[in-house]
Length: 119
Length: 160
Image 1: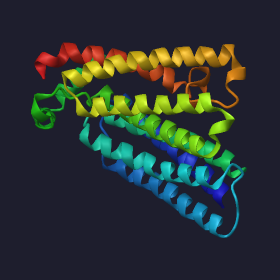
Image 2 (image 1 turned 60 degrees about the horizontal axis):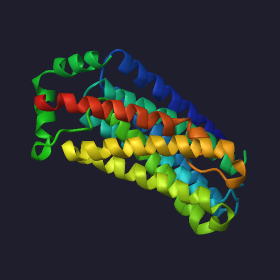
Image 3 (image 1 turned 180 degrees about the vertical axis):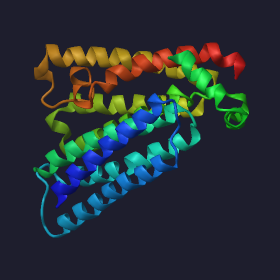
């Protein structure tokens, strides 16, 4: 369950990065549709956080330590919203590039989550 | 590319320009605009990454690799200070950020070379190991980009 969510979140994050990267390429700021996309990716990351905590509560243990695991899940959930708020104040292509960077960072975090869980 | 960005900024219309002026607090030059926003975001990510990592490692297994973990903490503090100066804006902050980015670049290069030349001194990796290899080389690319951005911000200052 957690592994499937990790892969799904990573793929969604990369798609978001491509989409916002394309917006930046066309010299556009983030628009409503982009924010809906960010919300969708964030929802995936939040669900992953909940599922991760539930699995911990059920007694499963990540390979590289519980603290690191939870820290990465929280970081992953906060990653895209933080960039989204920044891009609200920057109505140029640089807002889009920042969200695209957040997508790439989230995908990298997912690879780490995968390693930490021991998938 | 930079002139293109400026053109885009003005083409946004007066609304965006007024909004930007409105957020200039106390006449300070805003450093978080355009490419500066991406820089602040990446520095923020590095603060969270380096700080949480070094605090965790120092509190749980400091004896394992004291040098590596101390250097990670140092990196985290430098990142935190640069992020603060970028967010604050203004000429003094810009100069402070410029100095810190130069120090950061020197740190990445020295520590990066150190980890390659004498790996035995580092039983565990630090943030700047192998020029920031564990962080997609962002630690070495970030200060270079920031130095360019901060130098360019000065020439723009009279307009802002």
